[in-house]
Image 1 (cartoon, helix red, strand yellow):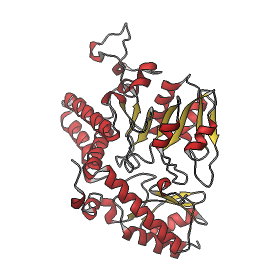
Image 2 (cartoon, rainbow, N blue to C red):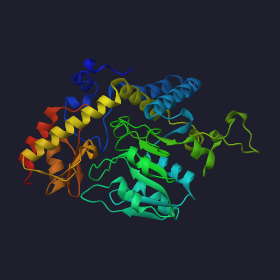
Image 3 (spheres, rainbow, N blue to C red):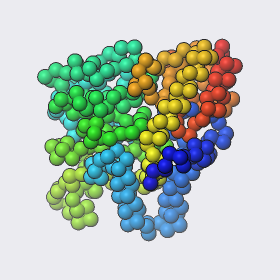
Length: 378
């Protein structure tokens, strides 16, 4: 149940994340911290396994399906369109499997490699649309379409500079192209509706904005795409009746799980992801998005006031995300000095990347700005 707006106490929500008691953690774009509930969900599995061995196998399988249903609700998909993975790369490769033979790929020059190189590895040409002032508009993607292209592969939010694409507009303009979304820098902080946005396939890791740690993630492949394609790799759980133990025939299941969950599940990662999704849904994704963007506006205002140069595109508020690239000389040394002052950010070639999540507050931003004033000349 989503919390009513008047009941949202951001200080109380912040208290669920112990990392905030020690540092100004502005690094979710690299790896998000765990809430107490998420940590307990993952460790609870290991405690059960330690105490009882395999006694809870059927309960764990049922819990896995509950997590699948929660993720489907989270992005407005159907449970059979959701596969539980361990990272973005595993999900993207499953998507490439499903779309191989559909044509060439349109992407952009800001992309993280996982959105492009799995296609290239399969000898599928990828055409990179060049950004203009750090942005790539849906019209730029449309102009890049040719009779040979059949796939658009883009991140919702660009890791490089925080530019946020308008997925709903891309969905309207994609034509007969398949829209593939890398949501690793957006799932957990921005609302995603795969049906409204006309997304054909989407993958995300759990260790960033989903706040569920390394070794967790999910992939969405639409029912239409599942019906049109076959998995490249299979395991014993990929068939319709895995407990029938038939070793002389292959009758494949037609859901996303059959493609992503080839063997025994990584229960700890799945349960951690489920606890995080439950937490996020409980707060409300609209409110999380609003809070993270509000913190980001405060951040960029303060950085500009302090005389720092923001490299992320801010011309269009609809392109703003919850991560900001800041020009800094000697970024490696600055990041180290900031960490010594209990301010955690990411080093980038151009400077530092700062992420504002819903658990952050104005004091975190002030600590960053004050620390930067001391370390800028390092």
